[in-house]
Length: 265
Image (tube, rainbow, N blue to C red; front, side, top):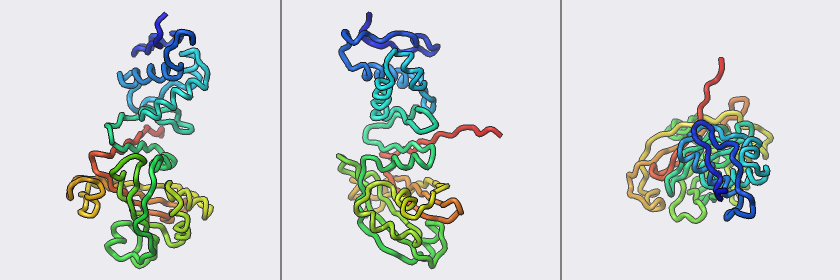
């Protein structure tokens, strides 16, 4: 018997193949399952956007426990090959280049993963009156007072920051600012908890921009380097704008991945 779990081919052959007995394994069984699935993903048997088989089906295929399958899937998530989401199963995602930050967006909940493994270095936080140029940029009426928080989001173990971030928060929810010096995650869940509201819609726009002189030194790139500015407007169920966020990423270090599905009409 071979010591390796064989991958399935494109016609599904090998799905009933049994894994080696524990006595002959040179690796933990979950790593063997993960390696087999990784080979199948990279070879295109499970293409980007496709759902992996369910945990139950994988347990049956490899004749292993649910714990083993979950550990194998955790390994694939750590490798950046899949994304799991409640109600949507496990989906294959694009492979990121080394040093590239990838955001896989399928729902508002997926924005919670944006800050995983990072911390936000606040450089400025203040209330300001929105003038006309800023009103046009963030999409709110001029003359209103909004809380602004600016700074770099830094990934653990990385010298250059992930992005420059600007938060604009409706004055009605500005009290959230007192929690931010001890908070590294996204802000909108704090607002939801603190004010008992729900973010029902996020409008997102991606624009090509150039790195400013002030940002260039921190990014370790030249002034004028191409970048992507991701603007998100967070709205409550009644349509009220709660928060507007800008994230600026050097293009060589960022990829936004979105999955779209046909809606039956």
